Image 1 (cartoon, rainbow, N blue to C red):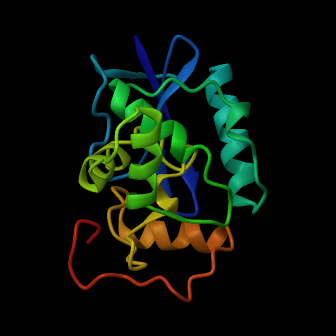
Image 2: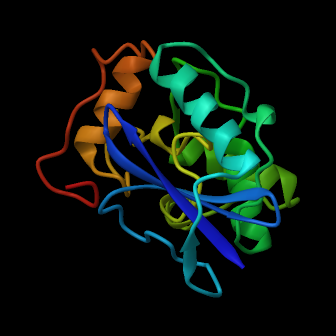
Image 3: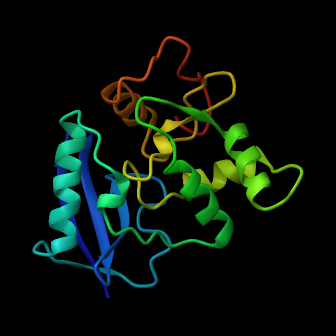
Length: 179
């Protein structure tokens, strides 16, 4: 059974989802792919230790602290390729960004391949079910474009600014998947 609760954040209402004491989802209100991958509907239940821990983590994060991802029991639902990509996302330090191409190179190396599609990586990044904690907002286009965030471009900008990312070489695209 999947359980859910909500968290009021500086970037809007966030839904948290759990199963068997693990976080399986964190989505912004209106986020693309909200709840995707869950095999059943969610039952609202606020008083769970995993939700208490996640809300504390989010409180620390939005207060400008740098809580460790390892503080939370995560269990994102997705295939092997997506799991590889999401593990790489977890390695991106606070205040830094990485490109889809750089992630593609890392995934290719892990899978003993010579190349990997940046578009395939973009699909996996976009379907990250545990946003903010698994920091998909730290992924940018090769040219500095702030494209591809399922939670919306405004949210991506706010999260990067909160983390102290140097925004001087980054820009909002005039059209693209983030808009």
